[in-house]
Length: 181
Image 1 (cartoon, rainbow, N blue to C red):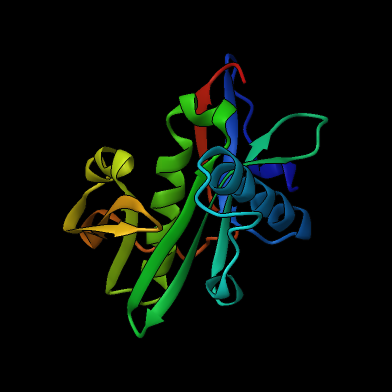
Image 2: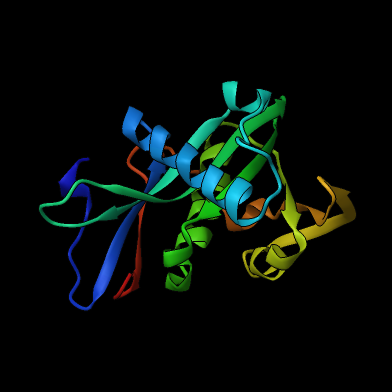
C-alpha cells in the first residue's frame, strides 16, 4: 500500500478508494464478496465469481492505518457492456464498516467517475431494493423494477452530470469515516 495517499485524521478513520492494483487487494476483495453475497446474504453457493469478472475492473476501499498492512473493507466492479455503456455490480462493504457511511458512496462515485473518464455515456446497475435510497441520494434514477437471483432489484442509471470524469482511478480518492471499527 502507498502510505503517502492516506491522511491521518484525529478521531476518524481514513479509507482510500481506488482501482485494485495489487494481488492482495483482489484476493481480499473476492473474499469480501464471498462473505457478503454467499455467507451473509445466501445469494450464491460457494462463490459469486462469474464471466464478468474476467473483463471487469475491480475497485477497492482500503482502510489506512499507520504501521499496519492495508485491509480491503469495500469493493465494487465495473465493466463496459457495449461501447459507452458501463455497468457496476457486486458492491460490498464489510459489515463492521457499513456504519461509516462513506465507503459505499465513495466506491459508487469512483466507479461512475472513472468509467466517465473512459468514455462512458450511460452507467447502469442492478441495485438490490434495500439500497435504492442510497443510489437515489447519489443522483441515480430507477428505470425498472425486476427480480434477479430470486430477489427484488431495480435497474438504475447514474446521472452523469453529477460525476465528473476521474482520470486517476489508480490513485483514487479518500473517504473519511467515524472512528471505531
